[in-house]
Length: 213
Image (cartoon, rainbow, N blue to C red; front, side, top):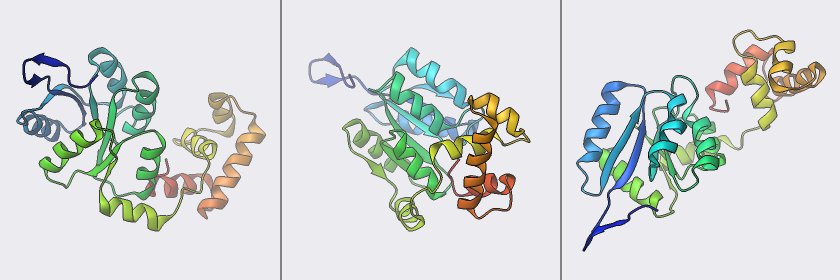
């Protein structure tokens, strides 16, 4: 339920959760969105780990999420929100034009994907549109994603590369993901081949730069 009646001829404001790790940016966005007559920022969080617990408590209509956050990413949180709070629409905002990010955002059910470089009235308009069930995608980011083509890595290959960051051994990855070591090696070998890398460290770097992780 997004805009319950609160009085004759009036509706409740759109409740917004804002996730942004930079305090000044977060505060400015919240202030500007609160100036919109039909909007209210009901929660601000600085880490990805806070998004789902806070959303489950306050039940926002729209969650405006950055991607690069301390803890878990905005994309990971969006995937969980899709399951735990399906009525909450997700709008991703980012400074990164990595084409893989847009495809992953669509995979996890985000309704919007915008650049932080855009004006706040564009963000406000996007919030209203996603609340109405529309998809809103920055044209430049959409063009970049289309020109880059589909993500070549499977979900498992991405998961194994991600788990291997920070120097984790094959055995460590196998335990973490409940896989056999031979299966982990197969996934890593496939990911290395698809990225054209020399080793799994380079494969992870390439995949990260392209927004696949």
